[in-house]
Length: 117
Length: 109
Image (cartoon, rainbow over all chains, first blue to last red; front, side):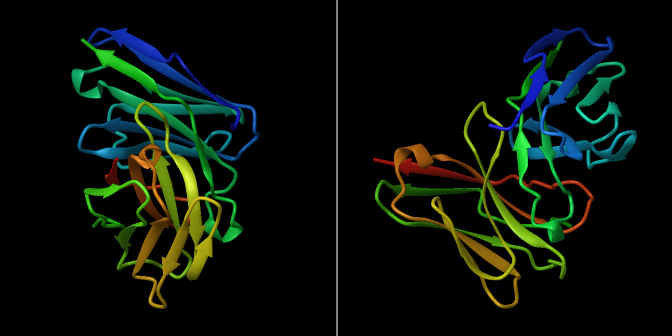
């Protein structure tokens, strides 16, 4: 399995509090992604990174920010958690985001279950 | 506009061949077609990827017609352990990997 670790694996927090989820990789892959998964919605992209300090928004980025200060870590922050952000969050990595490189297989972490009460 | 469209759910039986079709009418020249499998409480995992015609690996086959507006994932002789959600993606640029809602495949004894 690819070396990708999410922490924490489970978290319960109160509405209005800040929350940071961490994704750590040991594969030196360039691309990192944060997704959320909710019943009936499949996987939805929140933010992604294509290099250190290079990030971009996904389809559901409102209420989330990210940072990538080094290749191996990609942090997802909920500045003020809301109940609508209760979800399972997945981090993923890939060597290349460009299919022309034929190396775009993405590897996923085990997920973080976040509950906002 | 969704990049891909696939059935929400499918049922089959052990030992059967299962074909899941995905529509991607707006596929771009640079796009590849990739399929992922996801079991409950786990992240998705890569199954197969192709650009045109047919690709086969130890797990599945992927059939892509000449116009590339659709693709079919074929799982030979399924077992109960193939019960999962299957996602079809088209990807060509560095704009993130977009997953849809996937196809819930249920295999019965």
